Image (tube, rainbow, N blue to C red; front, side):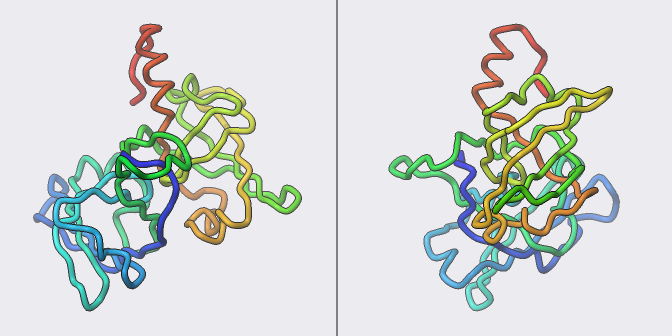
Length: 208
């Protein structure tokens, strides 16, 4: 379980295949800031761009850890199949503050950035989400984008998709990978856990 508050920026520095064909996953090595892994043990959960992964090995001198990601997870997520920056969040502990909202680390769908525009001192980020997620996105509701807990400012249903808008403050842009997004970039989306239960009570099919 996570809270959608990014605790560090990491970088995938190495991607190794775990087999010889597309049915096999990959092993990722992620570089972190010094000291970030001091309280992390083997088997602990760390979210990479909003996807919950298990730490499988450590390289202390280089501040790196590895995760094994299945072919299924690679197919259902974005930004985890090649070297590059990633948002990191350690699993929530019982005594931690819930600074964002309850995030499970399970990606519900992949969105596409449709616009990045100035909005006063902040930035408006607009994302096209799959139509299957439209019913779970609501004005002033919560959504996790690449693992970042954000508040939805506007929702517009479109044929075959749903566009929603977010206001990103400068601090968030500077301390997450959201600051590098441009139109066309693919992002991992996780809907609010409460929306899941409401949908279940109403008999709506699960997203995805």
